[in-house]
Image 1 (spheres, rainbow, N blue to C red):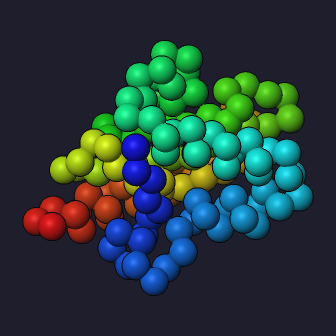
Image 2: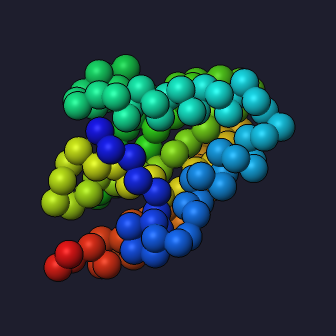
Image 3: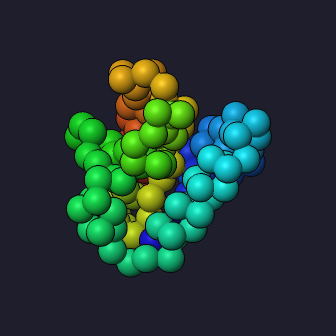
Length: 126
């Protein structure tokens, strides 16, 4: 798989929200930061995400939006990374938004949905 960060696909000079989240928000939780980086590296090294779907590390959310959970479950919190597949190349994942989830409800899912719409609108015709 190829991992890209929103909005780099449409604004190449901008750092992605997920990159900022991993670098800044997880800086005080280095073990979790390392787990997230290792998970993304594993995703980057495979050609098929079906094992991740089977073990529920990746789940579909709505329409074209998906979620990675790292770790899958933890009382100390779970990192959720929202992403979509590139509309013309399913080997490319676009990471849209991330959050550290302590509560049952996702807080940043709406932001991810907005970014998904922006991304899909901007990728048409490219």
